[in-house]
Amino acid sequence: MERVNCEAVLPQVMKQIKHGAFLTALSGDDMNTMTIGWASLGFIWGKRILTVAVRPVRYTFGIIERAADFTMSVPLDGMDKELAFCGTNSGKNGDKLKKCGLEVLPALKVRTPIIQVPGIHYECRIVYKSVMDPENLDEDYKNLYQQKDYHTLYYGEIVECYSYWDYPLKHAVRHKIRGF
Image 1 (cartoon, rainbow, N blue to C red):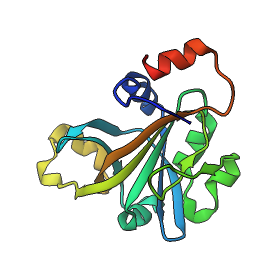
Image 2 (image 1 turned 90 degrees about the vertical axis):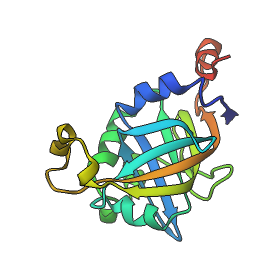
Image 3 (image 1 turned 180 degrees about the horizontal axis):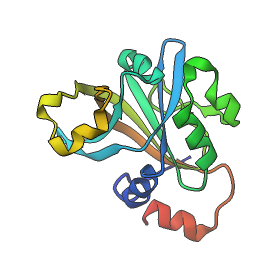
Image 4 (image 1 turned 120 degrees about the vertical axis):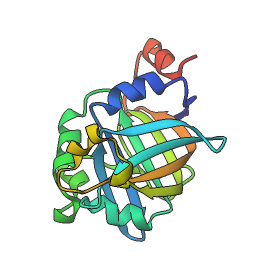
């Protein structure tokens, strides 16, 4: 693992999130990973904050509601099949990670593990959550909620950000990702 500057890797991370990233939550013995395609990174309250959105119909919702933290693992090379599987299958029906051949690694500062994939990893402490109020949602976006299953937004203070590579990379690629 190699610590990275959160701002330096932002262009690569935001480009990948459009295709998917792994959100993992852990509460007690319950853990689940789901694919997310929406996230926001920025500064709120003078802190680096990662905001993720989880619908109440998702299995992860019940876990993250009880969790103190979450992790986001952003693969920067492939993983399309694994992201698709984790985004279309529920953890309540079985171990998605095992079915995808994915494993977890202990996080450095939070209880929730990261997914062992080459890429950028965020460890976040939940500092605020907010249920979306449809009264405040612009009409142009209401079509995204035909089932009235509005997201809850989880604001996580980024307490650690690093890259993890399980295979050797050329120096030029590492140099580009680290932003040095």
